[in-house]
Image 1 (spheres, rainbow, N blue to C red):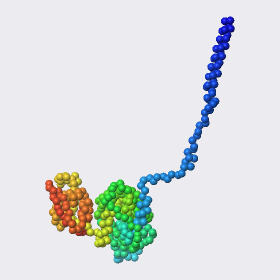
Image 2: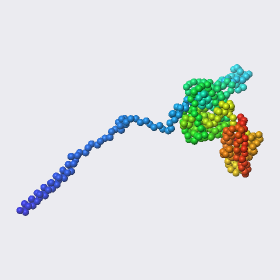
Image 3: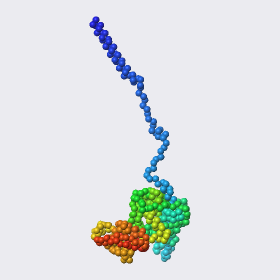
Image 4: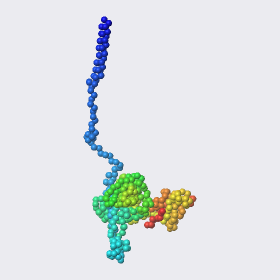
Length: 398
C-alpha cells in the first residue's frame, strides 16, 4: 500500500514538472513566431534625391558692383596724343658718320620722330568736356594733336581747353552731344576702407574695371605734382589707367586716377587719384579763365615742428610750422609774420605740414583775408593776412 502511494506521488510530480517545461517553451517561442522582426528600411540614395531637387543659385560673394560698372564704364574714354617731330638746324644733318652714332637725333636736341602718349579720360558733361591728366597729353605745344576714342568706337579730335601741371589735371573737349557723362561725387565724404572702382585703359586694354578700397586720404609729399592731396587706393592701377575714373559704390566720380607707386612699372597695390572736388575746381577755372587761379600769402619757407626742431629752437611744444625764411614783399610779412614764428592754425584749422597750409591758402578766394594763429616766443599772436593772386611758382616747403 505504501509503495503504491509513493509511486502515485512520483507520477503526479513528474506530470507537474513536464507541464511547466512545456508551458515555458511556448511562452518563449510564441512571440517570435507570431511577430517576426521586419526588414530594415534603407534611406533613399542622396544622389537620387539631389538629382530630383531643382538647382539652387549660389549667393554672390562680396559686394556686387555689376550694375554700377555697367552704368559708368561708357563714360571712360581712351586718349592719345601725338607730338610732331622737332628739328633744329644742325651742321651734321644728313652726315652718315654722325647718324651712325646718334641715329636720327641731332646734337641740338632735335627729334626726328613724332612722340605718342596714351591714357584715359572721363566724360564729365554730355556736351563733350573730358578730364584727364596733363602727363597723358604729353608735351603740349604747337602741332600737338589729341584724339579721343569713345566707348562706341568713334574717334574724335579734341581741343585742349587748359592744363594745370600743379595738380596734373587737364581738360579737353570734343565736338559731340548727348554723351554719357559720369555724375560727380563729393570726395570730402570719403572714408578709409570704402569700396571704390577704378576704370581705365591699362596697356591699351579698353574699359578695364578693377575693385579695391580707399587705403588713405590726403597723401602729400609724393613728388608727383606741385599741389598734392591724393586719395590712395589699392584698386589695381597700371600704366594707361592715368586720367581714368575712380568711382564710389554709388557710381559717382570721386577721383581721377593719376599715378602708381611701383618698383616694377606694374601694379603693387598703391595707386593715387586726384580728389573729385579738387579736379572739379580746376576744371571750372580752366573753363572760365584758361588757367587755375590760386590764392597766396607770398613766398614763405616752412618747416614742420618735430620734437627735435622744438628742442633745437627751444619751442614750448612740438606742433605747428616754423617760419624759416620769407620774402619781405609777401603779404604774410607785410601783415606781421616773421621768421622764427610758429604757425599753429589757419582760419581755426590746425596745420601740421606745409602742404596742408598751402592747400588751404590756394583754395581761399583771392581778395579775402585769413586768420593765422602764431606762437611767437612765449606768447600767442593773431594775424590777419590778405590773400593775393599766386605766382606760377609754388611756395617753398621742406
